[in-house]
Image (cartoon, rainbow, N blue to C red; front, side):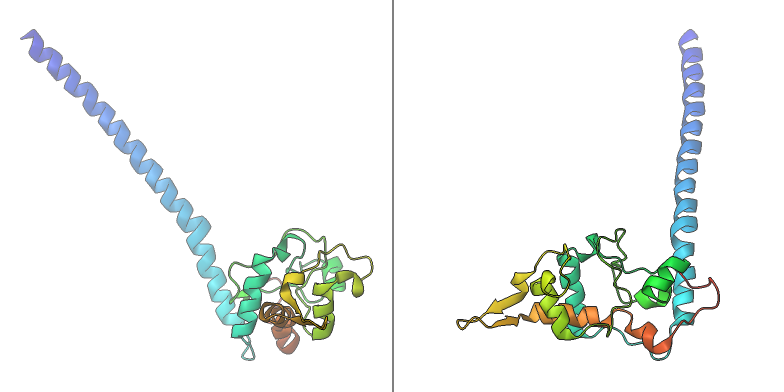
Amino acid sequence: MAEEETDVAHTGWYTRFERFESILLFAGVGSLLVSFIGLGLLPALEIGDQVEKNTPETYQAMTAEEQHGFEIYQREGCAYCHSQFVRTTDADEVRWGQAAEAWEYQDQYPQQWGTRRIGPDLSRLAGVYSDDWHLAHLYNPRSTVPDSIMPSYPWLFDEGPDGEVTPTREGEALVAYLQSLGENMRVAGPQTDGEQGKL
């Protein structure tokens, strides 16, 4: 009889514990679910709607060559020194141009916004310099910007037996990508009113 009472007591204790575990489990899973929806899913849906709404009809996605250049840009770590993000501050807009808008980055993933500006922001680089200038700058940055601290990228060039230096396919693709930065904004202009759609 005493053993039966002990078993009943143990069963009751475990039952309460199991209920507490279940509550903790549901609370934990519920918190994760709410966090995922509130911090991940809803902002992604909102920015997706803004991109769809604000993308101009003239928008041109990257060409295959520009896409290849985008991959070279990532591989070479250009974002460690250059940003691609004009902030909504007067200082940024005076210096670099129109503030960034979300629709501009829809075909760039992962976005190369960068967090440091050891070199200049490249968001509005399209057409600022010629292709030859970019190639010379990549081969020997000091040839175009005497005080530049940017490293050279000689592996983006071939040197012939006569000493002639020509860009590789990767070098040309990188320049094509650089020349595309900000082109859609230059053609279409800002698509947002006030702060909506700005990053």
